Image 1 (cartoon, one colour):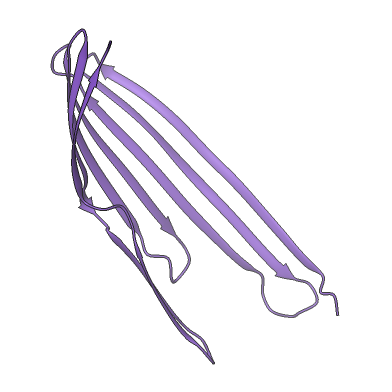
Image 2 (cartoon, one colour):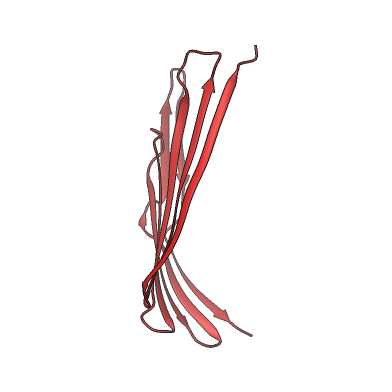
Length: 144
């Protein structure tokens, strides 16, 4: 028997960029993802989820050649099994006329694993996902 189902989804986002003074720049994005599903052939209530994704980057420019960046990412949802995840990265960069050297410290504060457990009437499901690792990187870029 074919069931009469309906699905609704929406995506809303806001991007922003501010430069309150010469040495500080802020950029960010917030996004909401909404999804709703309903089986009209059944008396069960509709199932809906809302997921949020936020990003904020702070750029501090103490000199013309030096830049400090703090990047923050936050993910959360109204789903019971969806754990809030936060990531924070730090980068320091030095730029000259022909090269750039940067040191990145990724995921210095935040989540490195995502764990879900769902218990149903006939099944017990467990999942562990490795997310962004904590890592340190040195990068050198040269103009030829």
